[in-house]
Image (cartoon, rainbow, N blue to C red; front, side, top):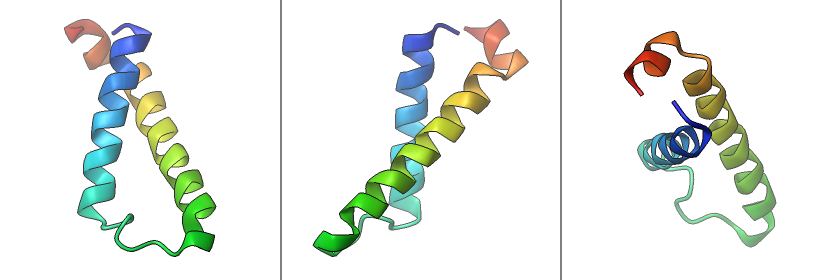
Length: 60
């Protein structure tokens, strides 16, 4: 899987995860940096898992 596709898929999975966990529901303004930090961490974890997954490498 190429890097651009992995980033796209990681973003899609992150958005779905965030929606499922209601992470963005009514954040207080002072919590926005924490929300962004969590979002970035989740996105990186998905990206790393996608890039390192042998089956996805074969499929894409």
